[in-house]
Length: 568
Image (cartoon, rainbow, N blue to C red; front, side, top):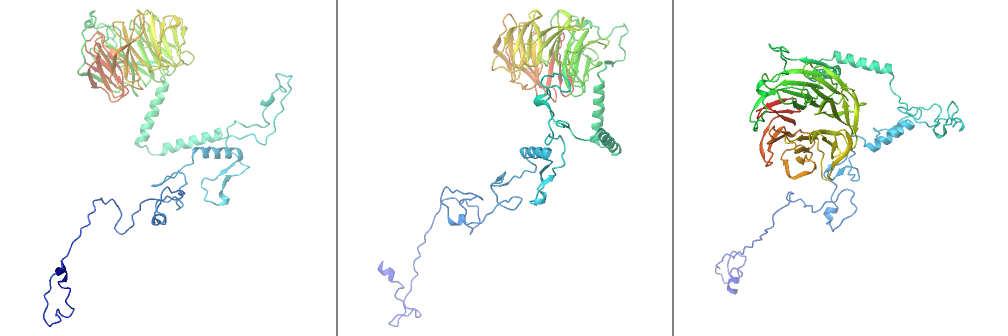
């Protein structure tokens, strides 16, 4: 190694000559390369030459939990600023990534300033820029709105020995002289009339756009809707009687069969009645026994009847409610029906002539559901929004019985047990069983886990009834002497939470159908609770389904999209 190190070390700087005059031989100096390997990934997002920040000190931060280098502590402030150009972190809405400024006054400050202005006639100017002259608006001498009683002289309390009269005892309720508390101050009647006239003139002179035309048509519909309180009827066919003098109440011969048909699930649509009701359809009912007529009610305050056997056409419209019709119900013989509306009236109509026979109203209470007593067509029950069930006698036109044990609005009424008893459901999440004519609950069905059941259907065998529960299930109860739930049988899969979708049984009891909130119709097998079929029927919620009592596979459905569809 010493010999290798001496190569080239003894040569002088003078042209490579040695001391004895000879020429020395030079060799290349070996080079040893060193490699520095760094396997850590580069995570810095900064450009080369710029110091990488390892921490961030926010504006106004007063505590640091670990040591920081001097470069971090001495770095200038950077980032978003507020409307005044500062970094005030204590301002409400300030975040590390920016500042959220309120463009309106918060509720508490607004109410405080409103009270100040009502009481003192002055308040802080919301557009204040810091000038002292603009700190407040108003003055102590001007007040608006409802004035208080400060500065008024209290009236005398009166003589305690006098009860009535001018000098009667008032005590602390005597008030003040010139009291204006609670008296609203605003434009006079003349000013309001002038303003309405000016607005009407401006609307008449302005050109009509598409939105204005739609609004005018909506207002005209609303006017006709309110004027519908006067009962009237409209026949839509060519003639009310055929060549034999029969009306549409005549039952076709092929529908008079006594045997019960074997039902099947429907597969295709037979008829669609578009725009059957403006605003949506609320209920549909087949006429008892024959089923050759279909009755419907809607949000437009009208009731319509359709032919479901031959022509499949609209036959008659019954107009007489000023608000939406919530429920309809045929009489046992099918010659009349009841309509319950949000205008607080329940009206009795003649199916054939369209005449309104009677109307009933229980002191302005809203009827939610009406049901004829199957044993007597002169008696019917009405479930109201005031938690009561009232029993009307048509002959006397008065209430003869009240059932008032519920704690919420009544949703449904169903007769069972040879019509000796009926069950009622309510918004109080309970089901109560009553003996007809006796206002005492004989059975209360309630459980902390129960949900509201707004719709109920009775099985054709009269042994079971089902309820549309608000937890997306159809629950089953026995309808015998003991009312108890069938825990091993329930129907699920559909979405009905928040909607009172009316379920329906097929005439032979083999199938159960129900709509859902997505516009579908679900069909289950009653024995196995399996979903037999489902199909998309409407654009909006399918609120009700109804099986034809004589046809083997015909089902009617209605929806809030205003259509009624007939399936086979």
